[in-house]
Length: 445
Picture 1: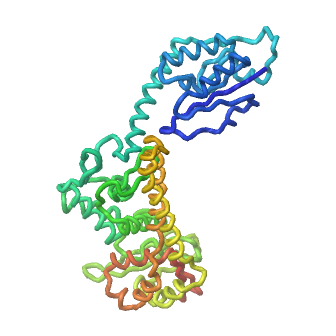
Picture 2: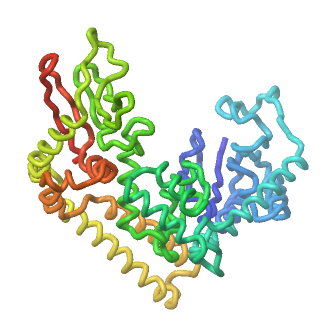
Picture 3: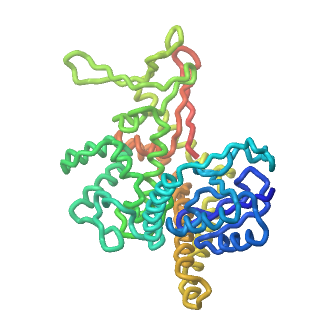
């Protein structure tokens, strides 16, 4: 028994699959990429040396249209070859019976299916494929994906163009989030200032949408940078990503809490987040803030601690420990990493610059040049994103600047909340006895 296989793949839609996808021992695999030369060779070889079975993934791989598929299907079956489509209900024998094949087994069932219904399915798949190919060709030309342009942009002939009437709204939304680090606060500000109502989920989509960063993102999650005018620059985009990652570690709704220590303080004894409790006296304006664990399982429960005392001690501690933490010798050398990534970007850009010459000399055809250009630009976008996510190279200078008590005391609670979460991952309070306590700062880096 001789078994052969045929694989066809369109480079616009998929990468070439492995030849070891069949789960059986195959005598020979024919593989085409973008044309059907090997399929013609397969038919010619089978006229000389007969094959018993031909394995394909789908019948539509045999041609570009129904006529070609029907013609080649007829030629192959006229040669006495049983064709098995592993991803469709088309075979002359059961797929599971191949391993138990017996040449003279007259009891082997025949599973001929309704060919007209299958051809109708193939025709539908071909129409869908042609639509995908059109989108893929537009993608290789770095054109915007189909659909409405995001709020703040409008469609131009071949790229997104900033909408001067709506882009300032989006820009102000980003600036508000960067200033206070609160998604819900930025959403409320947008409604109050411009009357623009959006949900927090829509606001999050705006914050992470590559279009506002001058990039295009396609359905396959590949990103091409520098395709149109940006609303936020790379530094702002990296800061937004850091804020979103930082807020995701905090308890629900504490990202926009009015107090700077909300969600950061944990009681080491009961391992619970300490909530901020506000206490007032009847008919008096004075208020008192405390940190306490509402669901403390200890008996007796952990005592509340005055908010102002904890805040004062944290400021003193951060002014001493932050410069020491930044000066640790085991921290990665971000400048070296950044230089290496930039070198890779330069090398890939040099290859892109050579592509027009290779096309002009006839070494590469236009489709190959477009595909290579697209792949290189996606790789450059990934590298630039890694560069943007690196911590600032002057981290030690920043640490020295914020290690002055007066710096923290001059900030509002919202501003202090922003800077605390930029450096601190967690604050642990350890109780020595019923009254005395100490705290430990856990920095992000």
